[in-house]
Amino acid sequence: MVKLIGSNKIKTAVFISGAGSNFKNLVQFSFLNKSPIKICLLVSNDKRAKGLNFADKYKIKKKIYDFNNMKKSESLILKQLKIDKISLICLAGFMKMLSPNFIKRFKGIILNIHPSLLPKYKGLNTHERVLKNKEKYSGCTVHYVSSRLDSGKIILQEKVKILKKDTSSSLKKRILKREHLLYRKAINKLFFSL
Ligand code: GAR
Image (cartoon, rainbow, N blue to C red; front, top):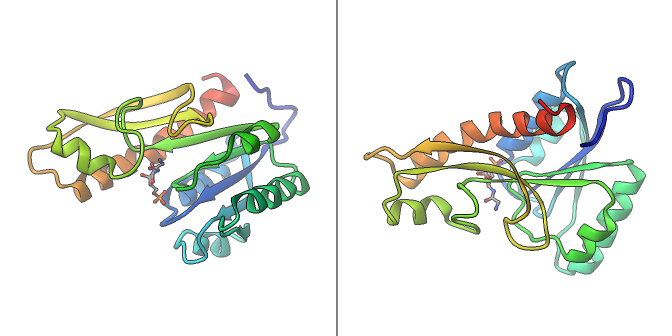
């Protein structure tokens, strides 16, 4: 467990690729007095990611790395993380896989959120596959990042019941709401061992 020293908050970077609702949620969480994190940096691999707008709104430093050359992008990111003294990375809809080298070289903690009950349904098109297989439940998971896709030790997981009328878009929406709560809870668990 990582301990908070005094009232210093954990300097955090969030990585996104798209809409950024989890990023927005983490920023709002970080503004609470009781929150253990301070978000100092937003990283996106896509300059069109909608979530970048939240960085402007909340005046958070944002950096875009296109990952055309993964090695170069990762090495630039590592430099930036050092500059900003980041010790926690929260992946939040970041659709690039970080290399084992990146994971080894970053000395802090890396977390990810995934919209399924891992280890089931790793990867893309989760909701479509869950519905196609007529599962009764889906859910979301916060886990440590390892160098394998959507793997690594699970911190928290929440089940969501699938309704008969669910489409992939209704399921996605319902799970996303739960993701926002789960990410907060997982971070609290990690730093306050709640
Ligand atoms: C979220 O559902 C997140 O769990 C998922 O992408 C979505 C991003 O939404 N992540 C993965 O699938 C990672 N494998 P957001 O941009 O609104 O936060």
